[in-house]
Image (cartoon, rainbow, N blue to C red; front, top):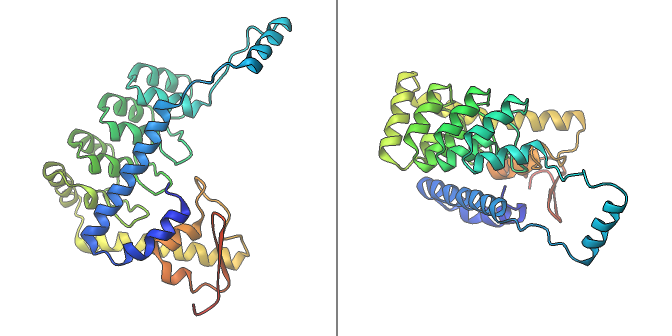
Length: 271
């Protein structure tokens, strides 16, 4: 997810954009985030064995710890195998009991990653293994958002066949068809929407529903005396999402405290 301060700094400029400009901005920002994460995963350098490390190794040999190995979390192993396009290893992980919906710190699942990389065979393995076709990352992107943005027609068709939500709304208020620039892929999505009886009215209702749910949840948290700045999901707070989607409404909250990294904005009623 983008840094909080960066998102805050973008808000005035984004507010002046028209709808097409906002969509392009959202696509560009998300592509940068995904590229940054993928690059970090692939280029992480192996730990260098300096003098201190050599001493530790000698101590381990003396104490009989030769059999110990470094192990990685299941989520790291699954995502790494998926990123390498190793369908067989992914299948073995799932058969061993590893959940197909494990994710990284940004909420990105192996299914998201393979929809970005266009690894159709791995996507099939994941879906057959019980992966949630509508899994959401920290910015509420589903695998269909990713496949549609990248213009991967065959993956879009597969996800729709497996029950992907055509009306899923991400944190920027965009549905998969909003983000699709490839004409053939967009036609596929719009045809599926028509076949499911999705009208413009239903589209607007779905967009509004996400914001209504957010408002209701914040109201409930206030009523319960909960901490609005407590991290939720993959580290972002509900208030941060509110600032991005409903800034004017959030800033009218009574004494709302918005913690964005080391910034604290105290907003009195009627701001």
